[in-house]
Image 1: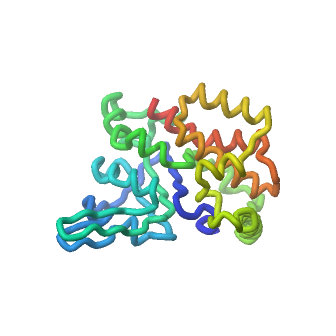
Image 2: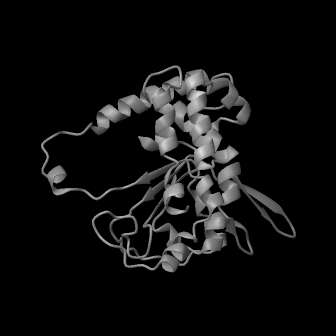
Length: 260
C-alpha cells in the first residue's frame, strides 16, 4: 500500500534510537549496488526499479558505497561508462533505510544512558553524509513500545482502511497530472511545484521560518512541498494547509537532531 503511494524517488529514513538490531551484513561493493563490473550489469538499485530497496543498519555499509547512490536517487537512472560503451539503467525505486543513532543504540534515549564516546558517535553518524540525508524525504524516529501499549485493547486503523485512503489519494494524483505526463507527487519537477504546490500567506511564513531555522537546502525545500502535497491528498484537501506543511517539515528534523 505504501509503495503504491510513495513511488519512484521517495525515500524514507527510519531511525531506531533505543535498541540494537543484530543483522548479518554482506560486504557490498559499488558495482553490486549501482551496477558495473567488467561486463556491466545492473546493481541492486536498478533491480529494485519501481520497487523497494531496503538497507538495514545504514552506517554499517561502507561510506563510499552509500555515496554512489546520491546521483542515481536524484536522476532516477544509473549511467555506467566503459571504453567500448556507455550503458544507462533505470533506478526509480523507493529507498528505505534504517539505523541506530550510535553503536550501542541508546544515544538520545531518555531512559537508558548511551555508553559510546562522543568521538564514536560522530564517527558512526559520519558514515551517513549530509548530501545523502538531504535526498531522504521522510525521517522517522521510532520510540520504544511501552508495555501498556502492548496490553491496550484499542484497535488501530486497519490496513484495509489505510488502503482506501491511499487508493483515493492515488486517483487524485492521476487526475491532477493527466496532462503533465507524470503520475505521482514524487515526480514533480520545480516547474510543476510552482503550479501544484501553491501556498497561502500563512503557509509561506511557516515554510520560511522552518527554512531559516533549520538551514534547509533548496532540495529539501522542494521535497517538503511534495510530501506536504501528498499529506494534503491523503486528507482529501485541494490546498496545502499549515498543518499539512508542519507535518512535512517535522519529517525533516532528525538530521538536525543527530547530525547537528
